[in-house]
Length: 196
Image (cartoon, rainbow, N blue to C red):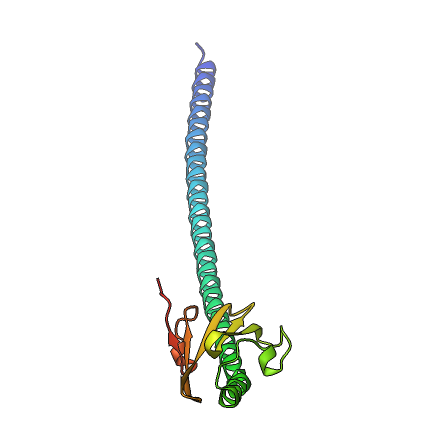
């Protein structure tokens, strides 16, 4: 072969091998670069997922804390409402028992004048259905001058006032209720029911 052809073959072989080497270098470099980019994308996605999970956990914690606070507030509100209702009930009991003073005085006068106890509101000059207070649903005078005060709608129950008499004199009154535990704290009255 001629030296020119040989040289041309050497140059051509060098070019082909250099081209192949460059192509392989680019292929591996590009592949390595792609792998590095894919790894970066995986890391970014993992970071995003961690932040999403953390944000979700924080949101759940915030909602849970808010719900617990609301439940506590509701419980305190219900406790306050129950305390107010209890105070209103106690005041209504106090008012109803106190309003019976007019009946106690009427029974005392009737007993002193007649020597017997009245057995009805009519005997004292009051119409049937009359009550000395709007907190009372009804009032009855029973045998022995016993006054029965019926409270409704709230509180609901009865208070009984029993005269303590001797000869033609009423020495005092006993107050009892089987319906109102704690009535001793409201009036000079005794609870006779069961708390169970």
